[in-house]
Image (cartoon, rainbow, N blue to C red):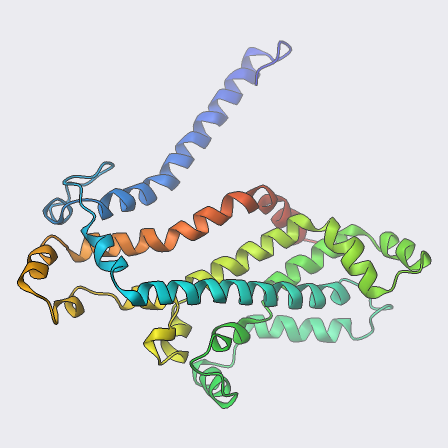
Length: 295
């Protein structure tokens, strides 16, 4: 908002900055909106490239073919289960790993060695085949644990939260210790309540990761009825729908194209994340900026 004390140059700078932000917002939202209207458009209009920012030949056929399959609802529930279970596990292990790593070496002598182990795992992985063999030998194939346990400790989130904890200051922990609080009491009663922004940020990272992952579902889940939503949607193509169809269904299928079908799949996968993000967005920038760098 303008104030009486602002000069003309200040007002022009504010309007210029506002205009730039509006342009950036439009550029970011335009592809998403185009995908939405494409999913509601007619097959011929989509194939001819006539769809821009409003649907042409409005139709719900792509969504009907996705939603009529019982596997869709099974996969959706599995993805919800994965997000809840994986997000909770990521939160617990990230906090428990970041808190001791945020201490000085005098307080935690093994800090540097453990930190190098974490960084090494972030820079180098064991490879696809060892990863698959490890999961298979644990006996958790075709279960939700195969999707959750391999990524139970996200190292990037640990480093982000560790730097945020270090920014709180050791004086706070020392004061809690003088009042008789133990390590766990200090962590859960002081550090976690003071780190809402960083925790919301790493939680958002975990939710997006678990919701968007599809490759591990393809490799680790052989039972199609236990695959997460992203894996199921990725496997959807028009050709499997051609089998066991009546003539009426075939006529309806002619209204569907791979272009509109793919757009509908993308829209469905975006909706849950877009519903969660506004509640965490106000913490996002603060959590990133305060937890990214610590000297």
